[in-house]
Structures are given as C-alpha cells and as structure tokens.
Length: 208
Image (cartoon, rainbow, N blue to C red; front, side, top):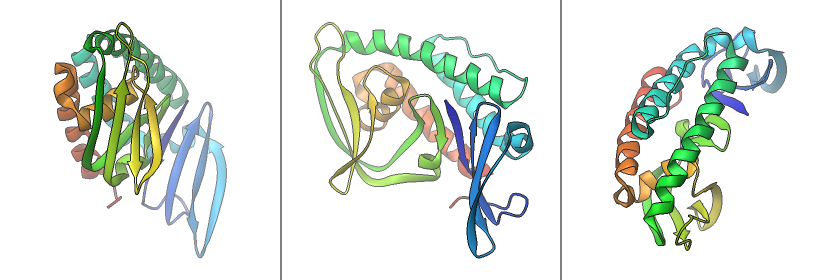
C-alpha cells in the first residue's frame, strides 16, 4: 500500500524528486546537485507537495464510484489514513468489477494501444506510469472461465511483459478499458474517466 508521485520538479534541495508514501513515512528519491539522494521523512512533511495529486485521486475515486455504485469517502486526516481509505475503496470496487467480468464469459484480447497508462498497480497508487506511460504497447487478456473470470491483463512492450493485473481487479479493468472498452459498458465509462484523469494530471504536473 503506497502512493508514488514523480514530481519532476524541485522539492526542498532536490532539483527533481519522486515521493513514495508508505504508512507514516515517505521516501524522497531524486537529484541533488550532480548526485542522486534518497531520504526518509515523515509523511506529513510531503503533504503540501502531494495535495494536488491527492485531490486528483479523489476525483478519480469519485468518478469510479459513480460507475460501480461504490461509495467513495475522502479521508481528510493525513496521508496515511487517506491512503488506507483509498485502498479500501479499491478493494470494494474489485468486488463489484469481479461480479461484472464474471458475467462476460470467455474472451480473448490482444490490442495495440498508443500509450498504456497504469494509475493503480494492485494496492499501489502510482503516477509513474501516468507520467511515463508505456508507448506502442500491446494489452493482452484471456479469460477462459465460464462462471468466474480467471487470468490476468498483461502489458507487453518491446516484446516483453512489463506489467500485469488480475482480470477481476480495478487495475485490470482500467487496462481492459484502454484495449477493449466494448466488453462492458463499465469499461467504456472507465476509458473516458482515465482519459480525463491523464489530462488533469498533465495540467498540474511538471512531467512532460
């Protein structure tokens, strides 16, 4: 359970930094002068820098909640509790999406996408693969289950598997939405939401 944000911008004496929040601590990794440094600080020390990205994930959660009918509650008592609450929301959506994909039945997908974005990897909220999506990627998924969806959604890049997500998870649904939104109405909605999420990210981020 973590939040990963590449700031691509100065933070204190870092010329650019990636911040990883886990529990009550945050790890800051980036360039300081001509060298790279890694420091551990209290999560509350990075809250101000991460506030726009927390707000962005709150927007995403609210939009996803509308699609799946799962209540999204913003936890306002610091980053650790906010992150825990967001992960609980992901688990609740996993259950709803799992029931939906179970009803689709067997299918096979292998599609080219210009850019593959991953805002979630399991319980990790990561903007790394939003700032730096996989270009010219292939998204592959095969469900052989007739009553329960079984398998993974895989991202191939340069002929190599670089990422995967369970087919019954929100992470997998967001990948499927990019490759095969026609499989379910919910995927079509997720595709639109993800496109807007990416646009909103670039409107606040220094990453280009």
